[in-house]
Length: 339
Ligand code: ASP
Image (cartoon, rainbow, N blue to C red; front, side, top):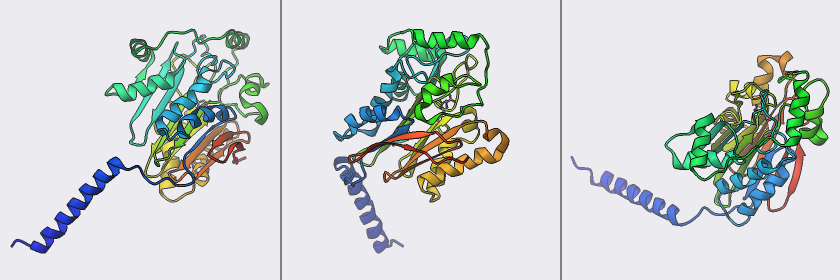
């Protein structure tokens, strides 16, 4: 029999839902005090955050902010771990990895891309202009060139010299990598006992409308095997964004992060109720427990932000730093560490 009350109830719900949807389309979410905010890995994150802040402070979109932000270290030849001026692989090729993800789980990634200063923008174009998520190597380069990017030589004289010095011993020790806090990227290059091998920028932003995005870009481990790809361009490993919960990014020995799907794991720990720093610590614990002896010899750092702007970090070894920019602060913090 026709149930009039039930019918009225469901049609009221349906119309309310429709009205709410319409309403959301025209009215942004209410602004709250801890938005906007941008955080990113390492000391160089401060300059990158300034680029992102240009966008966020004008009520721009988190996606535009993270792209603009990480383009700063990508273009900086004095940073030997990202973009132009990045250290090459063992055969002398500068191969770049990057990915980007927005509040709707749209994502794009490039892996082992050569000759392009801004891999993050190519990753965004993969996300926005193709039905795919990942392009690699020669295919990624052809896509970039066909879409207006110019071919450049990314190997600076300084990076070339470091690579040639390294070639004298070819001492490849990708697992030994513990920063000297004061100037991680430079000291790691020259640190005794092994070649430099990391410092990626991972950036997470929450905009004025409550939407999050993230970006991650790197030249990867220095003197790696040609074709090696780490965690940084792998969605779920080097970066993950879920607007309902939060976002996370990582830096350090990528192989260890991929093994535990690190950034996704951090977000899932936040979904289960952990605050960001605690979620990062639990992911670090996963790595340490798998092989405690090996963990003593390597670095991994996670950085996370909840969708209310709360943030935190945790790493294996002392020395991982991260930069925070809000309407009231512009600071670099040192992460807590397992050891
Ligand atoms: N995670 C990067 C990689 O394994 C390295 C880094 O963070 O610097 O390629």
